[in-house]
Amino acid sequence: MSNQPIGFFDSGVGGTSIWKEVHQLLPFEHTIYLADSKNAPYGEKSKETILSYSIKNTEFLLNKGCKLIVVACNTATTNAIKELRSMFDVPFIGIEPAIKPAALNSKTNAIGILATKGTLSSELFTRTSEKFASHITVVEQVGEGLVELIESGKLNSTETKKLLKKYIGTMLALKTDYIVLGCTHYPYLIPQIKEIVGPEVTIIDSGNAVALQTKNILSQYSMLNSDKTKSRHHFFTNGTIDVLSTILEPLTPEMLIKYEDF
Ligand code: DGL
Image (cartoon, rainbow, N blue to C red; front, side, top):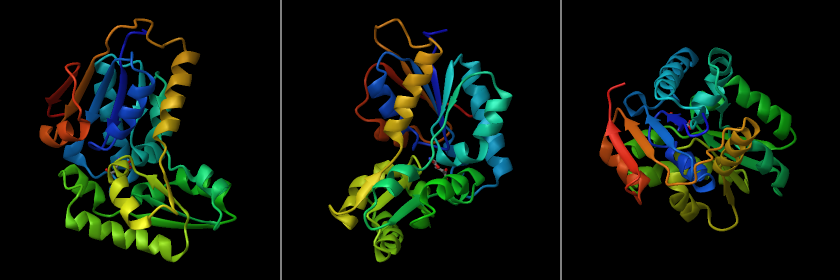
């Protein structure tokens, strides 16, 4: 069991930001990543649709022998992880917007959350926000259009920068000193966001926390790979190979990227 791969899925290429953190912390783990780009964005879809995609993605990864699944998508985690855990017999690691550290550390008592509509309207997000941030101002901003732009490789386009200015501007007007990236696609826009907010605002995401939790759970279940040779990484996409390859750079010979119509 321990030398079986860790599975990851996302609505597209964004979850690779999580894959990178996990791979850095656990370099000997084999991995399989599924980019459901054909169905992106998940953020505008109903809970039922997000759940059915998440079940399909999980089955794909389990058929390839994954020992643990990282749901590398805030939208799928907040809408489907409870059901996935009750349906399948493997450990699941999810990702949620990092409201807690932002709320605890904010000096202006105002934080901004940039996420999808599906995440911000979920029960899980509402509960976490009430638990950790009811005493401060939380500016919830849907990043409408951003996932589509990242999926088409337009990270530095004028359109992307214009949308970011609009979304971040709403937050800055309310004096937010922390911006939480609540979508795994958004870490790829950190340089562009930094240009807008300058050094006074801290940008946080949950990638590192997910990697640590993955390590803890694998160790708890005695599932860490004991074989310390080179690990293999298979990436499957039902979208374009080009964007996934570019976002994964630098590529190594152990990384195999494949198109598959799932
Ligand atoms: N990466 C997904 C997330 O973390 C993107 C959601 C989408 O496809 O809209 O929420």
